[in-house]
Image 1 (tube, rainbow, N blue to C red):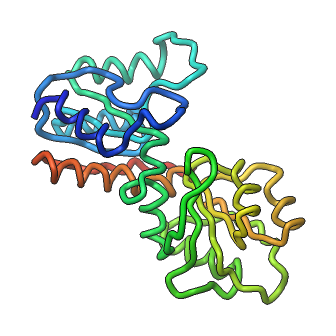
Image 2: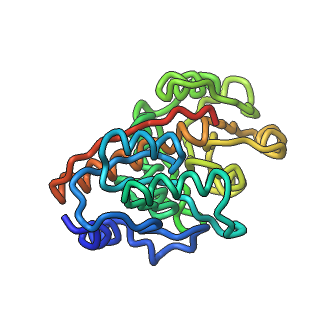
Length: 252
């Protein structure tokens, strides 16, 4: 299919015009006009680009693109190498950031809930980027039980700041994938017993203790690797494209 048709389909699904984002959503690097094979991944790293070249991709679809607000605009070093690979092999780079986080079915929050067995009750917060709900089984016996469950499902260790009183189960859980530690207070105001995101900063353990809640840092990459895969599968189904998802391991 034509690149322009693929972009139109993605925009219809994700509606990027509804978001104030940190970088451009949509086409970031122009490659060949005809697209048959689509590679998806979390970040437009050199490793992903090289893997896409090896897979003979026509386009790469990612959550974290190359261009962000506040960059100098200088094309040197790692940026030159990544752009050189894309342009040299005529590969399109498409990126969707907050629109992919928030999509109610294909988004990172929705897909993380699916992985963890959480039932979403509503989305709230700035640009509807936070989800809140309950475990499928009703509750977790403790914050540590929840942390163990998340660790097992995501295949990585979880940082837990546990401020819940002894014996209190976890019934209401809020989550926002990636680097959303700053949304913890909004989650607490919404009534969450526990909040899951990708990263932890210095203030969050204090808030957890003082507000009798739990904060779980589950990995930025680990929480965001499911949305772009689901989006790629759906767009491939709709547009009859070949889809290959490539997960480049990242300990962050």
